Image (cartoon, rainbow, N blue to C red; front, side):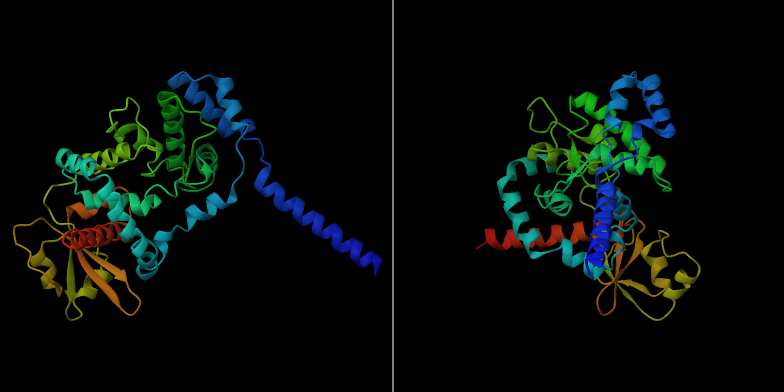
Length: 337
């Protein structure tokens, strides 16, 4: 019996050591040829200090969960699951509270950038629950694991890693202490480093752009982002649609479902708006969402695609739209007594 206990203890010790090595021990990124090539690139192009960059990479930990999460984001879930997670009663209620707290700043952002306050609030609510969940990963760990992986998206994350080092130098941030999401997104609006550098604004006029702690900067930066990537004031986002007959399947079979069409063109395939849309309005795209019992169909306008620049998912853009609508309705109801 004693020998069996001893064998079990040895096995358990081996397993615990293996798990510990996965989470805490790295292969020393600083010694990898691809990392060293990246360091040389940063030194030559941007005049970074080679030893300082190598010291940063020597602290990077292997995070297998980062790779797993990027391969299976929530946007791959069906709409009914995604909606339950993000268009929730909690986010609606706290969205109204956030709007009331920053009413003047949201109005100023709407006036300046043309982006509705409701869309700004909903974006913050979905991204970080109004600042409550900004991410528990070191950004340098997340970006390094993704940038030097065999993922087809590795070049994108190497570019973001480059932008991250530039950002930390410009903002006087310690690259070893900046926290974010598993994909390297930073702060309350979850901007990737490139977006932080190009779209963040010091909306609070404090002298420093701070997307981690300054909600006013967050409000202005999200509005500026949407404005810069094409938001059009007073234009619709989506409209509900109805599918009549089976002509719709022609678009599916011929891989034309993602093409932009006029409402008149869509009606030829049995796709009919549930609300009145003027013929002169821009082209739209059909959006198919998997509900619990059947599918929902919507028509996405230009501003829907603008929201998708933030996150390239129909589910995400629809969640922003619906959350913004519910927040607006609840706020109006409460304000009107």
